[in-house]
Amino acid sequence: MSHLILVRHGQSEWNLENRFTGWVDVDLAPKGKLEAVKSGELIKEQKLKINYFFSSTQQRAIKTLKLILNTLRIKDVQIIKNWWLAERMYGNLTSLNKDDLKKKLGEKKVHEFRRSWDVRPEPLNRNSPYHPINIETYKNVPRENIPDTESLKDCYERVMPSFKNEVLSKLKDNTNILISAHGNSLRAICKYLFNLDEDKITELEIPTGNPLMIKFNSKNEITKCHYLDQERAKDLIAF
Image 1 (cartoon, rainbow, N blue to C red):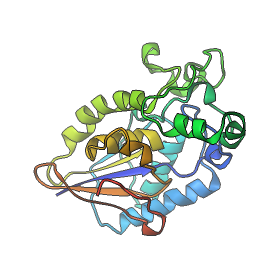
Image 2 (cartoon, helix red, strand yellow; image 1 turned 30 degrees about the vertical axis):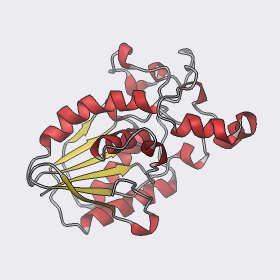
Image 3 (tube, rainbow, N blue to C red; image 1 turned 60 degrees about the horizontal axis):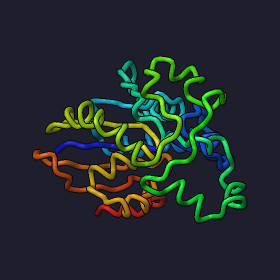
Image 4 (tube, rainbow, N blue to C red; image 1 turned 180 degrees about the vertical axis):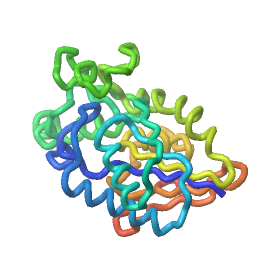
């Protein structure tokens, strides 16, 4: 039996302000820090030895994982930080308030930008301070891999090759892995793991700071999955 635990970072400062964040490297909001600690407490109750810890290179995911580790009383452990786990890049929507945009474009159009499979916003100008090429966090990412905009499909195609090579390859019998990442990079992983089609993936919403526990048998087949905080659980769709 192996376990994969997926945690969307706690509420960020821009989640709180209802802004499109994407690759902008914002910090956790106070509520997000509490959600991260709560995640740690819920994971601790499972009494699992976790073998590998993955995070994106964005600070809201890293800080969420560090708060979880602190709650688990785990020190001096390697965090495997990967840029490919970053949030979806929202193009020229980056930094805009979602409610303001609904008034301007209509709720249907904004929902399409947020949840559709293959619709990309317009590219973000590379001179923008919000473009990842101008953010220190991504200085070591090859320029050709830094997007100007992404659909969920683009995000999926960015995430999955490395997820298969670096995560699934380690998920062998009695191996447990924890990933701290983002709503859309985790949606991409869930699409693959649960074989969700392009319509179903648009319905999947992953709550902040609520660990999703996925159990695998010796054949790497999923046998069970559930959110550890049932009071804040979303409809998994998959099971």
